[in-house]
Amino acid sequence: MDAVIIDTNVLVIANGTEAAPQTTEECVIRCQARLAQILRGSEKVLLDDKKRIIQEYRNNLNEKGRGFGDRFWQELVRRMWRKGEQEKVIMVHITPLAGNGTDFEEFPNDDASLKNFHKKDRKFVAVVLAYQSDSEQEAPILIADDSGWKEFNTALANHGVHVDSICDNSS
Image (cartoon, rainbow, N blue to C red):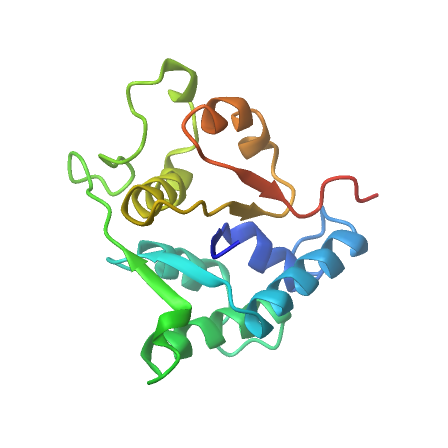
């Protein structure tokens, strides 16, 4: 994998079961390990150019927090601005529709099977599709364990969007 996009639930769950009491300790460990792998490795993180995703992270994390997800987000923001590290974060342009910030030209809006897909998650799909169109490379969306994504996996896959559930099969 060359690039990934990370759903907010991965960062929240990486902060631990106190931050996400509905999850398991195994899922927390898996999320932390996957984020650490991204920080150590060559994978790039995809974000939208208007910082909608960064803002969602900010709304769900703690800037002064000590949780693993908080620290990952803090490092991601540093990499966006630190000379020599900017290539680790790819800013992707997506085109909003109707000015509402939840519908995007790049999202497969004409697919009836995605009509009920969560509005706040459409930006992640739009970024992946725009990136794949521009680069001709795949980039999965990393989620922790989110049934809201799972029910749309087949429909998303039909559009070339792969969702990688880090915590699948965790007990």
